Image (cartoon, rainbow, N blue to C red; front, side, top):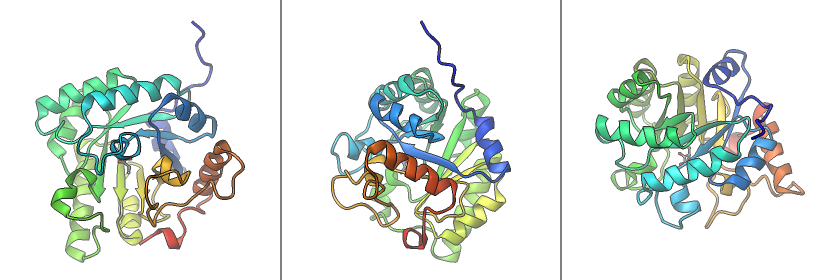
Length: 266
Ligand code: KIV
């Protein structure tokens, strides 16, 4: 079997990017063809997001996604990547206890990903997984797995008390051993303050330009989503002659701090 000469990015490479002020680019990926193309465009991280519940499976939320669905898509993406760091979501209720988190994170790691992501300030789960050698990405702000409790996909952390809670949760996730943090739909000023406070890289989606990196759902930035694209996303296909060019334009725009603009932020 021929081995690729391209070295995959590691958790240390992502930490070094934050240290030297280089923006980190991330897109969701769910299959081998897009994995190869996103990698070719130079994107640093591919997130096998449970957003596949909507983009791939046609559900109205991420809740129906199972660990077997995630493991399948994690394998498809991981097999085709060469350089990008691959993260996969632990879906709804698959980390409600330490025992469940351990089994389910193991399933994702054994399907080729380098890190698992979970929603909320689940510090006890994060420290347990980190102690087993499993890198963990936290996810704060808008938590899609809690949509039935939140009632809507609204911006989080607008009031001072809510903003302080997100900041405190971010610090506790870092102390618990999280190595990356996704901040979704929070005011740009709050995201900036968190990115400055934390040593670990903070990746924003609808969180302003001052995060250490950016993530978008692939279908949103290619304008092939079912329904309207969210305000924080941008259609990169509009000015591109090919899908590869759209991916490269996104990569450049994030690296140069040109995306997100004020109109994509809260
Ligand atoms: O599932 C997903 O695509 C995500 C991103 C929105 C960050 O978690």
